[in-house]
Image 1 (tube, rainbow, N blue to C red):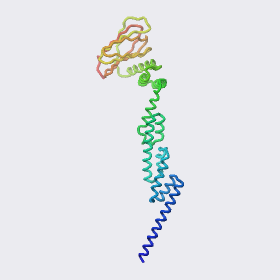
Image 2 (image 1 turned 90 degrees about the vertical axis):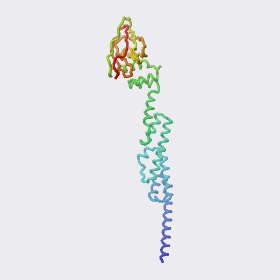
Image 3 (image 1 turned 135 degrees about the horizontal axis):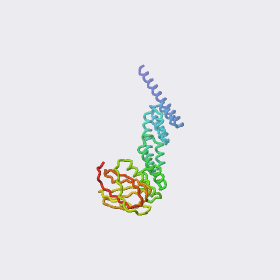
Image 4 (image 1 turned 30 degrees about the vertical axis):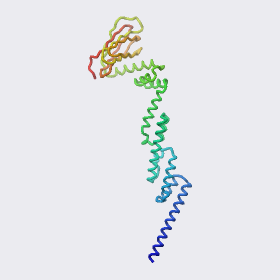
Length: 286
């Protein structure tokens, strides 16, 4: 009698398994007909142990893979409790983000990097923001006219120096050189400096300009800058002497040779005479 009961239990169990398989297959067919991530997730919820659950998980990932807005996918955190699907989606996002980065790198334009940053999770941007800044900076110097606007708006030594370096024959070279010298001299006056002695004044030339003879008696390259009506910069090698003509007027003058030597600054009123100035090092270093 006990054997008969056991056989009946086995038959009932087999029928239950068969019924469960039939139901999972039917539900999977319904999910396939609807073919949405929600439908497959509902199937997984009801049949997490079924063989078709893995196929359903692959289907969810495949549907998400067609969504190119990776940032939104991550922000929504998928809304999925299934660990396996979340892991696969994370791998998908990382792959897509890397592909998008490589594409932005190949294009290497302002718009390309902006698009990448807009559509990529913050933790996968790599150095995209720095690359965007580089391209935006490059765009500000891409033509002579735009470069001049950029230098003017920034009004810094670095900006005018960059303009002069990129466009040495540009339309605004003379003005850029004057602005550069004026800012350079102002920076010397604003910082730690010694007082520049007055130049030796010789005979009057009777002209609208003055002649200055500069001698570099230091062992370093010397730069002497005159900021005024006719701003100029004179560079002399060690032991060299140069003569320069400068329009008359009031000038702020700066002299420096680097190498830790304190720069010097002073003022001169040029009145159409011949001047001479000799530079040598007699002060301590910084």
